[in-house]
Image 1 (cartoon, helix red, strand yellow):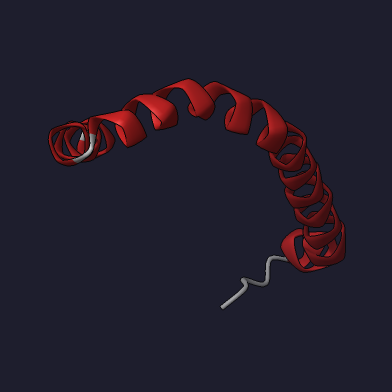
Image 2 (cartoon, rainbow, N blue to C red):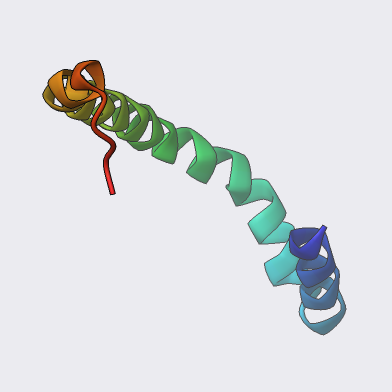
Length: 65
């Protein structure tokens, strides 16, 4: 919602720039998509490593601070 309101303000102030941003947004999203996928993958791997490392503590009943 905030993004839409900002776009509306930009449209009032400088409509050619707002139209250009509206057209360019899907292409920028497609360019950044692989980086998002890599980010999700890295986060998943790091969560897995943390889970493996803390597994003995959870089995023994100790809690992490």
